[in-house]
Image (cartoon, rainbow, N blue to C red; front, side, top):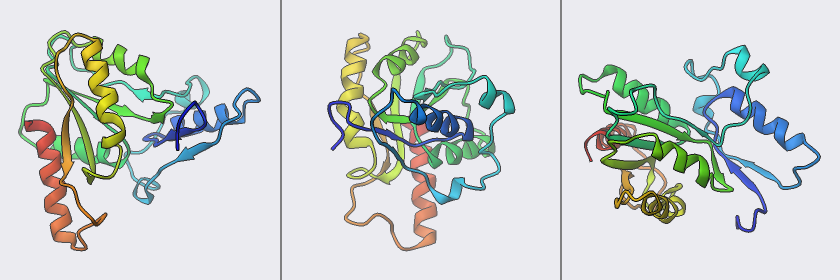
Length: 197
């Protein structure tokens, strides 16, 4: 349904970015609907905060660039969106696995696809070996099918000669397993896959 610039589709990870998207939407120049995907679990999540300055001085960011690791040391760039970002950060904080080779970029706007911003983010890293899309949805759901070819085209245009890799659940006819224990095991596996593939 999203085509020819007919709507904006977003999934926010910060209150400030949500605020700026709503401000942008109120502008008389914007005449397209805004579709927002947001899980209830982020509503009162303790890590989902923004500084006052991000509201007063900031602007809408279609992507939130990766972590502050040295651009030269980053060999893996992980793109993700929404709640899985906070799950991944929490897993990294508890893990003994090294993560100084890793940068995590949050995709806040899916459509219109922020091609230029993503290309700039990819260009930051001179030692990049792999680019990964991390999602918690099954492979046949979520953003993977929308992003896959767009990201592959961007990687080819940047001369990397690589394809984006997928870290997420296997294809499924159901959106969830129905078992909290199985869900937690699957979640741990996909977060670990983002580190190891």
